[in-house]
Image (cartoon, rainbow, N blue to C red; front, side, top):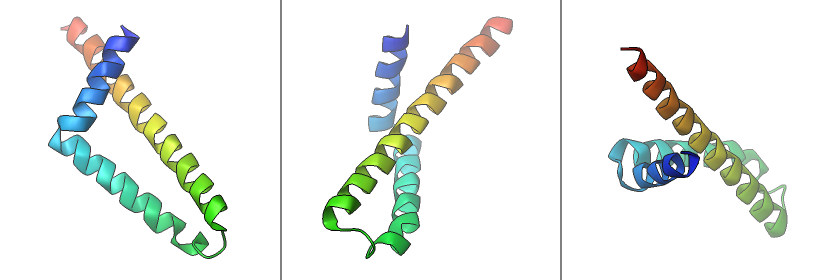
Amino acid sequence: MSELLVELYNHLMETDTDAIKMQNRVNLELERMLIPYKHKFTEEEKEKAYTFLYDVAYIAEREAMLFGIKLMMRLMLEL
């Protein structure tokens, strides 16, 4: 079931207009939050920080989406 949900998540995030808009907003916020540190990092540190934060954002988005799907399925079973 988890693999199916992850496939569904991946498909939605690649094709759904609202999901793409959400990803763009998250990316914009990450960029905005990193502005104060732009000149404090070496290029290597900056790359590591960006990679780390984008990985964390991806995991958070995926887990939130999977939780939402599971919650909707439980609610539908209650009807």
